[in-house]
Length: 272
Image (cartoon, rainbow, N blue to C red; front, side, top):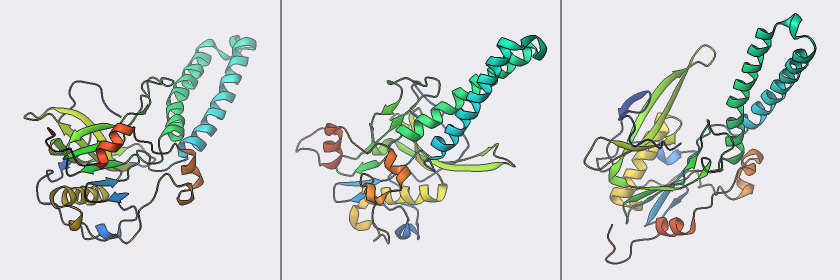
């Protein structure tokens, strides 16, 4: 989600290290050719990588649906107790229960909405002739559950030279503990250390390294520098190539002007 603050912390939460800079020599990734999810598109002008904020689709819909059903039963029970037996149960206990219901409901609804509305792919296009990167960015806000303005796809465009890829890892309270690793892309204001935006890249550091190295190769040397991928690219708008749960999600539809710009070279004499 895009943060609307003027600047963000220089390091992402759980920061471990920065990957090589956009114009540095790419890190050698021997297994890039066998990526199970290869690039969506490669041509002389642009290179498109797939991306998804959700690691597993459907968890929010099914898990959230069950949670809402349980919460609804609890809420109805508490309502009944409030009307008929609040003296015996105790008003304090009822209020605590209602607070738990409201808090849980507020936490579950965004997860369900995201699973339903998040596009089936959130691609990133690297245009080497314009030296710009186009993010098909889905914005969401957990504090405004039903807002239309704060939820939805709003692509953003940044200069390739202003990007920094950061490897991160944090421990999350998952049963006996769990390590969550990912790579995010920070956008640095030129000539400063100010981070003006931070965007999700990959769910694991190894894939993030491979994708970032491929992007560097393409932007620095062109499509000829990329390996021949073992697996064919996936058309995320073709239902026959996706699971039923992915087909529920909206298709990728770039705005016409950004779609054209991201796939073409600048006109002669254009100021980049």
